[in-house]
Image (cartoon, rainbow, N blue to C red; front, top):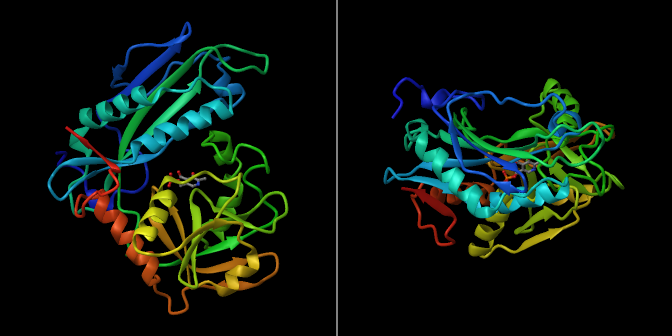
Length: 340
Ligand SMILES: Cc1ncc(COP(=O)(O)O)c(C=O)c1O
């Protein structure tokens, strides 16, 4: 255990760890897994990652459980999603077995950076794939580097599990209607920076994007999916321009387990008048409750958390998912991978 870190006060930043793991795709095949203690990569100046954005990534977490064991949450789903992202922008997919082996290895090698149980902190795992071969024509690379770095991150809710305000701004789209939104492509995040900074400067925690084609339906909430509780049902947008969130998928399952009906469908803006709870969901926070949604174009404010507190369904789902991740409750769906 690393005793120098103040686990409870870590931010979502970057703290160096001991090792990262790497694997190169060259001459039509993936090579051996390399363990590195270097924090840099040596890249050709004409690499497709630098010029044409051939870059995809993932984000998942490892937790130290109540029993002291380290659990990685739903890593097979991240493995499948990065394959989908690779296919989406013509990169070489990383086989699920290779992804799994590398995640296990990098967590084990950096075991001393997995925060203690009860700190609220976790080890963030960031797999990354880039096109590395030299190319000046717009073409996919023939060589790739897949690497995984890890860094400890602090609890998302430092001031407690409190609702925050989010906003709608029609002047920005994150992605195109049939574009890259359903994949975890670096360029999507570059395209969201301007809107995100503007929202933060106005005091909002995130932007709630509308669908980029008609601006009629809800899409997602910055780097997180959106769900609402409406008349006892869990409703969440169906859209081909949002990232399929693994947290959202898990919360939907937990909602069903609790006897709550789940609807994954188009959600119109005016439905926000009739919801009882809302939250942004993703690996970073699990569920971040929404207090108010402000439409900055029309001036309309949708007040969700009328008493300023997180709603009961969001709270129950959040607690349940956290308890599974921390080994406090039985993992009935087999979501955790224990690192031995
Ligand atoms: C755009 C976007 N949507 C949704 C999510 C939430 O996905 P997950 O629950 O898999 O972390 C993320 C974060 O990964 C994201 O970047």
